Image (cartoon, one colour):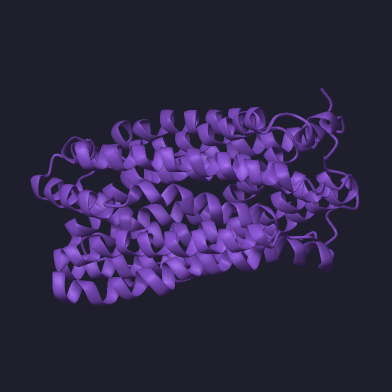
Length: 450
């Protein structure tokens, strides 16, 4: 099947079949990446110690910032590509590919340089103590040196999926994670490199995946490929990409701010081990959240293409199926966290105090986790149509207007439990806002391209 036919199927094949075909590879990629993060924490917890898990948790805000810079280009580029392909404008899709490469590298180098120069002060700001700073520094130094590789890999992976190759994107991700899983225990247990070994394994796996992606886009047989002239930046293309990518960018920047506040609150009310408990809870919940993100990535080309082709009936059907699937996934996460918290915590550590804190945090954090899937899907729906302002508002309202005040005030009255319960409270209020916006916008459908 040619690339053109693969893209055109987005307007003709059944939505259910397409959603499965596009989402399953993306979900598989995201789940495997999430499982790697879990296994990496397990290796670090048992191979280095409880404080190493806390040190790794301190790096979460940094990783959110790194992801924000990456998604600014990757999501925007993939969305504009899908809309362009839906409008049969393949020349524009090729120009977006060139912008993907240039902007990803520019932003990555700037971020890496700034991060390396101010690494210790930033980690202190993010909650590192004297006991956890060395673990956090060892991990982030290596990750920052590999930032250009990682950013470009993620951007091209999104573009590969958006241009009609979801299965290939999945296999590249799976191969990369396989390399990562093989190297991490060897570097930690055999070579004794500690948290630094986990980071080295991550960067080397990204090098492997990037090489495969570059081979694909260098092949002129594909409809969208590298060619002369597409790497020259144009303001109109960059603006359309960055305006759409601004939503996930701001979402991850806000996530960084929120995790910083969480870490500081946990440290004040429970010490370094409380931060480690959040690291465990976060890794587990991200498995389900990443599954929904894979679902929205699979939805993105369907929604973007059919929006570009003015097939709003297919857009809405994709949304319906996405909400049903997303709710089912996070409901499974809710059930697992409520029924088996001790078993899950013991996967990461045998430290009794850390296990106890993790169990308590897991049960409180997931009190309404079953509604989170629909929130993520609805935000992805607006983003995929280029309605960046709505997606940005949904992201900011949940993080800044709802969660941040809870994190500031509830611990004053409920101590450590106040940190945990602020999260389900924000999810409940955010779900109501998201559903209200969705109902209104369905009655006033979009009529123009992003």
